[in-house]
Amino acid sequence: MATFEKSGKANPAAAVRHAHVIGWGMAVPETVMTNDDLSSFVDTSDDWIFARTGIRQRFIANEGESTATLAYRAAQHALEVADILPTDLDLIVVATATPENIFPSTASLVQDWLNAHEAGAFDLSAACSGFVYALNMASDSIRAGSINAALVIGAETMSRILDWQDRSTCILFGDGAGAVILRASETPGGVLSSVLRSDGSGGDLLAIPSVGSIDANESRAGANGSKLYKMSMAGSEVFKFATRVVSESVEQACQIAGVNVSDVNLVIPHQANLRILQAAARKLGIDIEKFMSNVERYGNTSAASIPIALCEAIEQRRIQDQDHIALVGFGGGLTWASMIIRWGISKPSEQHGSLLNRQRRHVQYRIAKWRSRSRRWRRRVNSKVRDLKA
Ligand code: COA
Image 1 (cartoon, rainbow, N blue to C red):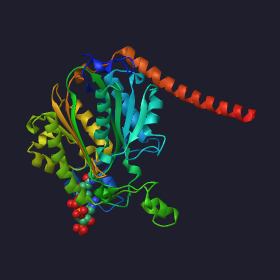
Image 2: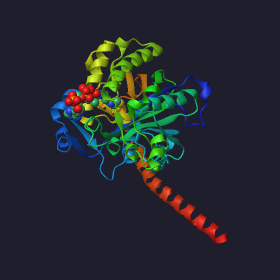
Image 3: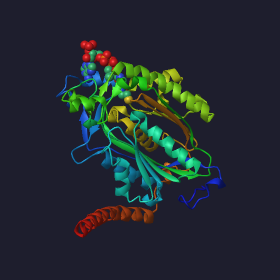
Image 4: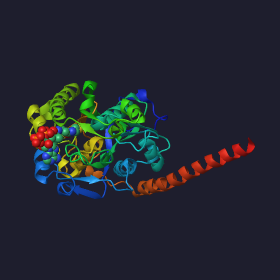
């Protein structure tokens, strides 16, 4: 496999560049909430939820867990599989609708904790389509030659923005994170095509108002404050939108990649609702067996759902070398996005990682803590010295 050196050392014009997935990882909180647990505090039942959505349970972050801690754990697993060092990364993107802060970005926190001090970092907001958007941004940067290795994460703590009294939304979502590492290679394949779309006229169908919104102004004036940071959803409208765009955008992405829909080996869709996936599979004329689904165990983890499903598909050996994989996300915005990947380079059986690299990564994680603390400490001392001089 021909790869490129870290950015700055490579000659991007020297060869055609491709962006390949070389690592993957996921993390979910420890706590499981079943449908029966939910029905103990909201008027619903396991039968109703499972029949309408295919969901049986979801993972819920506890007090010590957050979007960034889940993202960090998923990133560490992805680095193990890729067997590269955090300092090899040029870019970290976290797709999330539940960021740790408005700023600093969740990506910057992960960058600091990993000791990925050669990487740029930012969060991307495209709701449940965010992971495919982020993968597109990173793979385009790799193919253009501006970076060589990127860590792309989808991470959410949806449980923190749900109205737990609203049975039409709180039953659907869960928490978790998934990550992949993309790297430049001369080997053809990897990300072949992407389709990104938005229809802002449907923004009100699925929304979480935040600090910059009209609702925030009203809340400052003492009215309507309860809307802030709470999800609202027009379920049946979103359902219709989702079934339409999944099939349309997968077809478009296939066309751009020069791949027949019938040649797609596995579709890894955003895990919102099993019935949406069944309807989309029918429209596409693809056997539902070719649709990866794990919504039963995780619920809808928004931007994290596609990378989590990807990890499980790999673990279950549902992806083989040279397979064509379709990723498709949809959600708030409204947004939707599809991508075709020709799988290559790394086979799960080869993913053991060298012992030396594993040790070097662990040293870097330890260094990260000290580096971060010492930098903060130095800043404080410097500012004290400046105050004394003033
Ligand atoms: N438990 C029991 N009953 C419930 C319920 C729950 N959790 N939620 C709603 N109901 C009731 C409603 O009150 C309604 O009762 P009524 O007929 O007496 O008024 C009835 O069930 C039907 O409600 P409706 O909203 O029409 O159900 P639905 O078949 O559309 O299913 C969703 C609701 C939310 C499961 C479905 O619309 C959906 O999955 N939409 C897509 C949502 C989604 O995926 N969003 C994220 C996209 S990224």
